Image (tube, rainbow, N blue to C red; front, side, top):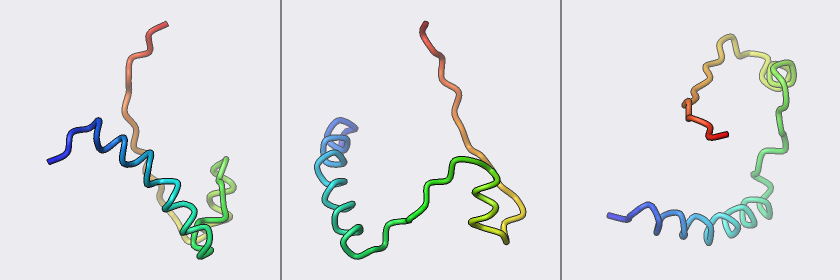
Length: 60
């Protein structure tokens, strides 16, 4: 089993390689959705959207 620190390290090392490979194969999404309207234009058949979030305290 891997600890979180080691997993984080591997993600930082391997994610750029994965992104480069997927970008080269043209399989990365070509969209960056910034609003609900853009989302529904991109996915017109979607009727329901569920947003999952976690509240975290903010130290100010």
